[in-house]
Length: 116
Length: 116
Image 1 (cartoon, one colour):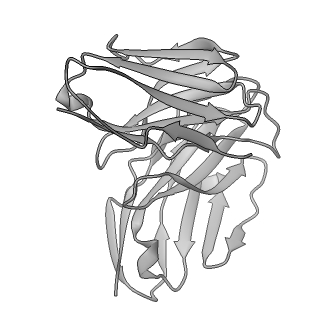
Image 2 (cartoon, rainbow over the protein chains, first blue to last red):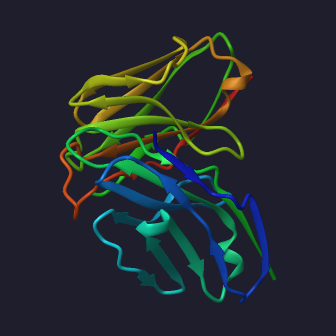
């Protein structure tokens, strides 16, 4: 069975602090995809990153960085120098690979508050 | 065109009404999905269509009736809903044939439904 665990329900940090959102996943697939989505108060799901199981390179995009470690089944997300606009719910998600339609399994989400 | 378009953005309906949600994509994706998201919860899968055929129904009540008239359109027909069905309804689409470098799983902005 596939499962995504985001142990942090809610995090509050002061603006300009760095913050890391944890994500641990379970899957029996050898090919799979991991995602992070941002959901601001307006409600839409904003795609942040997709990583496939064959690519363990860490990625940096501006203030955002992701650490993918297959050995610990983790895909953590770090925001550097946080800003108030980063306040949102962040979902880590998992989908199987292969030639079939696949549902995305979401974690429960981490609500991030960036305090001015 | 890399978008999934959902209409309407907001909908208020009575428990005896019949309404429909619409989802459209022109990315050539052959898998389309309906997700339901209650407040402060992650999105939950309702239905999956693959090549215009229903492939997954996650035990959704019959008052929700999906329809996929062609490869670009996905509808969700609503009838005799209950107040507890109030939620954000998200549509998504994806490629059915996957490759490690390509995975077009895209969400729409959602329809926020209120049942009164």
